[in-house]
Image (cartoon, rainbow, N blue to C red; front, side, top):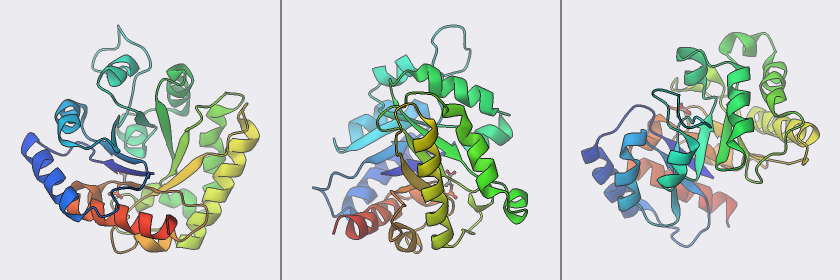
Length: 245
Ligand code: PEP
């Protein structure tokens, strides 16, 4: 699974260029890799008309309830527009919008399997230096304890210090954390689900292969490098070349 997180970037003109550049470079047309684009919500309709069927659209954040939730995009609206997934608990939501683990839990639980949740977890630089990475991630995952998860429930491991910084953990360290995440989710979810785990944080076409070569890396969540359709296509091609040999 490869997800492009456009954050609050893009325009109608950019979306047209993006798909032209993507399809010029994309070379594994028959693979079944889940390719998702999470643009700002206002562009989803346009992107649905530009994309091809093997590409999915999704949200960067979601509100499970409809009605009295001013400013939010509800799960029913996402479904109405054909979205199949939503990121939940991105570190920028946690930092700038003060989303707590409790609020993130409410979203995951009340989505009620309507849409694939991609739960983002990860430690800050300070927590990393203090050796608290696993402790922090365990705590962020506790919200799904005793919950029956969507079959395609996915976790994105995104160290906060790696997002947009050009820095990343070593590929082997990422692999170890991904194994840890799979074990924790399996042991605490009601349906003992072993989730796919994506890596996110300064992934580019230059370093993607080193991550994809790791056994427990099932894909990537890509911010900055996903804004260029040609670079995102390169990353998808590298993924397919590494995992789908
Ligand atoms: C992100 O915001 O989820 C992300 C991974 O960003 P970047 O790839 O730019 O580090």
